[in-house]
Image 1 (cartoon, one colour):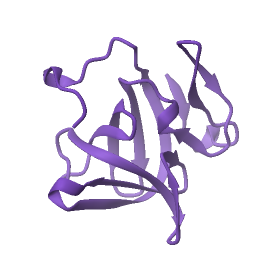
Image 2 (image 1 turned 90 degrees about the vertical axis):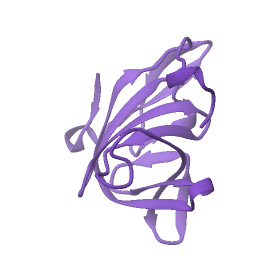
Image 3 (image 1 turned 180 degrees about the vertical axis):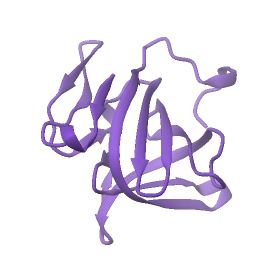
Length: 137
């Protein structure tokens, strides 16, 4: 497990694909979703809730952790993170930023409280299959 808690924030890390393998690369800010393999699982803590995020494909994830919005895993589009109201870092999950995810077909759009810690609990695999054998949400 890679821990990206505040004590590790100065070195940070994200997964990077290279020739079919997954390696860890340095970063000071967080994780780019596009660099994670399908099946990778992240746990992030905001000032209000703890979320579990499973990368499905592209910018599609399954998220849980909010008591009313997603108490059980919900397939959503991960838009990115924002530090300032006028700037969204697309496809990025960053400490000190607010996570933004949506489910347009339901009119759902969520901006979380500030992310205080982030860790990768599973690196995923090329053999990952979403629940129920379905593809993208």
